[in-house]
Image (cartoon, rainbow, N blue to C red):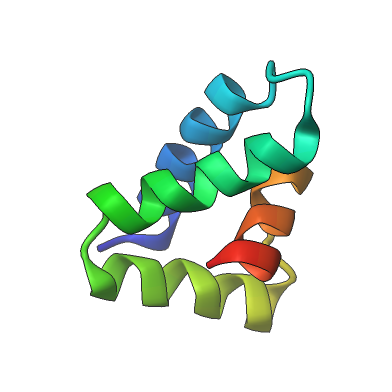
Length: 70
């Protein structure tokens, strides 16, 4: 899948969960959502994007969620 599409989708998920008062819980929920609803190749692609491109285009909360919980 196109990385720009994955970044957009991940940011949409992050936007929903970042309203949680507990930001660590929000990061866990972002990662849980990605695990439950994204196919393994999609998860691998977004993890690679974070590792190789510093998560360019991703919200900070999404980058943190991927690095810490995915």
